[in-house]
Length: 260
Ligand SMILES: Nc1ncnc2c1ncn2[C@@H]1O[C@H](COP(=O)(O)OP(=O)(O)OP(=O)(O)O)[C@@H](O)[C@H]1O
Image (cartoon, rainbow, N blue to C red; front, top):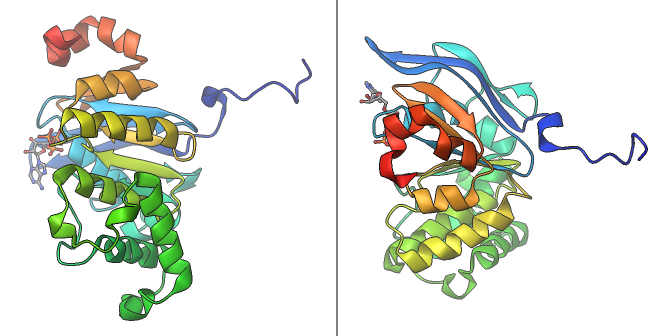
């Protein structure tokens, strides 16, 4: 095999997203302790840990809604630690939220167009025009098609089921054409069928945009994750494959217990 034909393994590629030594305290509470982790092309990297371990705090620093006390965040090799959330989004960092950020009175399509408008970098005062903009509506329709919501485009978002709202959140994130995705508990509140469908979708999506996945649903984590990092008291106590994490004694004691 010539040097050129050797396939790049994920480990040899530049991480799409990386944190280096992130620290964050709230008074005496150390919510992030020197957190260094990365997200590589084509992978799903799950972050798991007990309630209050610091998962949301970590995500907030990666996405830019919270400033770390120390350490840095890198997106596609660039230091974005001091960039605002919307700049990170425009650079390709997509996200879905634990608590829905959708406009309930708007239609499904309008929510997706709103996402496409945000991604375009145009000022919000063009919001009314955006609904008649072919490029934006096409981007929105394409995203809805991908998550299987195309038939519900004209429906009011408030009328969607919980699972459909979760799908719409993913569609809104996709309008960015993200280079990396951060997902905060996408399976929460989903029934078994919804979880199964979303799991299948995320499984394919990782090739297009690798996913940093915070999730309590261990079935989903074990079936999807290429790597898992375990956060306990603000600290990553282990990172490894599903097998390595399931077999790790410290992880079993601190978090997994019988689930492993
Ligand atoms: N703004 C804040 N001010 C003070 N303390 C905070 C703040 N945000 C989070 N914390 C504390 O930091 C710790 C980590 O919280 P965080 O929400 O990041 O955990 P989590 O792992 O996301 O929990 P969950 O799984 O319940 O969502 C908790 O002890 C929490 O009470």
